[in-house]
Image 1 (cartoon, rainbow, N blue to C red):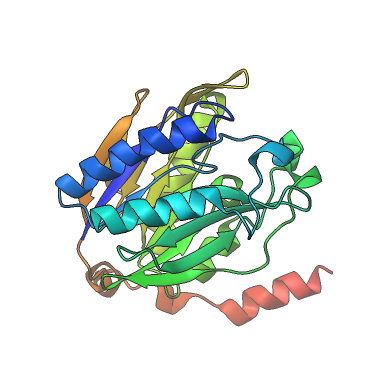
Image 2: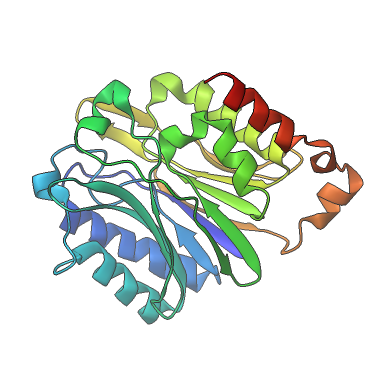
Length: 262
């Protein structure tokens, strides 16, 4: 499978402009025979709390309708982030297939309280995994990356875990280190899709990457906007068969640890 990672320089709160630039990347990815392209968190608005501006309703889900159109026109899968609802909002990441069908729709489980995201966005409560072209994708969003239990559970079924983000440059070492750790400890592909540039006074350095289950970095996009494509084997069982860490997990014991601390 060929996956494209698009490191957008998001124009803050300018949805129409970002949709236009994303369309060009979708077309480029399709021309290079990618099967699917992934965009960062809140792909077309940036990390904004202004949900009265950015929020989309069931009656007019602008981003969703546009992305479905791009997917059908270019016969490519697309993963993208958007905000649902103007009040009691949710931070969503959705994957559609080349026919525009929704394969997976995830709500961020851990809103970033440090920046006040929890005051505007309701948390999700469900792990989401979908199948696409023979691979199983798990989805998480940005701050979720800091909570390892989520990835341990997802990796029971997922071959690859997608992490769209708006992760600031000042914590980029955390981003790079934790992505790699999650790949190694869970024996999955990790795909980190960050943005780049300045948004609302914050600098984003990108560092989007694809990391294999052995912890090898297949590529990393540094401080520039653009797109890279990686070819991923559809079967990751070889990594797990060669070094079968997962069989030694003691999930029942870990559960007792948590219950005992209450």
